[in-house]
Amino acid sequence: MHFREIPIEDRLEYRDLLLLADEQMDMVERYLFRGTMFVLFDAGDPEARGSILVTNEGAGVFEIKNLAVRQDVQRQGYGIALVRHVIEHVRAQARTLLVGTGESPATLGFYQHCGFVRSHVIKNFFTDNYDHPIIEEGRQLVDMICLAMDLASSLSGADRSRQNRAG
Image 1 (tube, helix red, strand yellow):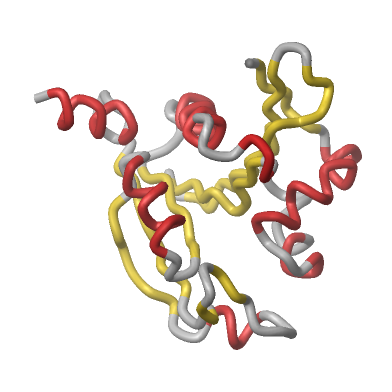
Image 2 (tube, rainbow, N blue to C red):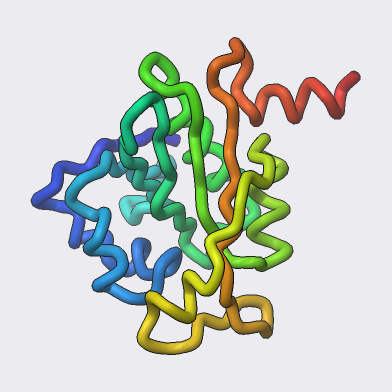
């Protein structure tokens, strides 16, 4: 498995992946050209397995704005690998890594497994910002659930999560 940083001018080539994570293009365009984007490839497959885009929000805070794994290769560790790659990429500059998502049990569980903890809620985010209802796991998303990972410690959240399960 290897990661490639995607230059701004090439990011729209990965539109299908970006839209897996954020299904309205004008919402994607709010952050697409101001963050750092990585795409994950695996040996023998020229097609990208997944992508992640992280932005520097200032004062040591970075935010994962978009994380997607191709549907045919989900639940194989690619999502966690993308999060770990971003953690290593931002670690020298970051105090905190944030991510916002809908109240979808599977997605929240994934981020908590990676070491994120609930931080705060942005009320009505999905109903106020999208031109259509966003449905995940059979329910309409309304509020954005924000999660945070403290990167000030020496272990990443994913490493702490593994260490806690082992101990």
